[in-house]
Length: 199
Ligand code: GRF
Image (cartoon, rainbow, N blue to C red):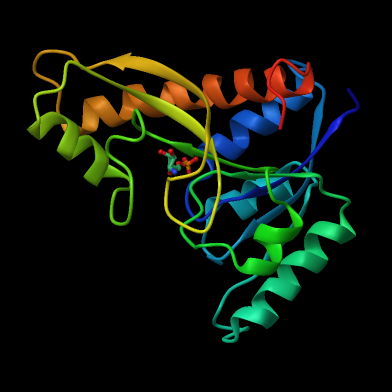
C-alpha cells in the first residue's frame, strides 16, 4: 500500500500526535503527517507540528461560528495537504457532516478504555479512569475506532488491554494507559499501512 497521508487533529498536549510523527520518522510504518489541525490556539500540538516543520492550522468555532464554514475551512486544510486518513488524537470537538461524509470510514480515534465500556459523551480524560477505578475493574485498555456522528460509537478496529494495578490512582492509571496509547496508535497505523487492517 502507498504511504499513508495523515491529517492529525489534537486539542491539548499532543503526545499521541508526537508518537505518530515519530512512528513515521523512524519508519515504523509507511506514513506521513501532512497537516496538524487544532481547535485550541494554546494546544501544544501546534508547537510540536512547528518543531517538525509540519503544516498546521488553528481552526476554531470562534473564527467560524457557523458549522458549515468551520467544516469548509477544515476541508480546505485537509485537501490542501492531500490528506487521506484523519487521525484524531485528543480532539475535543465533533466533526461536521462535510468532513464525516468526505472521509467516511477513514477517520480514526483513540480512546483510553475498552469500548464500548466507558465511552460516550462526558467520558474523556480522567473521567474515564475515575469510572474504571470506581467500578473496581481489573483491566482497562485502549481502543482505536472509526468515527461517526456520535461519541465513541464507530466500528472498533483495534483494541488492547492494560492492567489496572492494586492501589492505582487516576494519575498512575492514566499514565500507564497513555503510554500504551502511543505505541498502540503506531501499531495500528502500521497494520493499516500493511493492509492487515482494511479501512
Ligand atoms: C488521550 O488519552 C486520548 O485517548 C484522548 O485524549 C488524550 C490525548 O492526549 N482521546 P494527548 O493530547 O495525545 O497527549
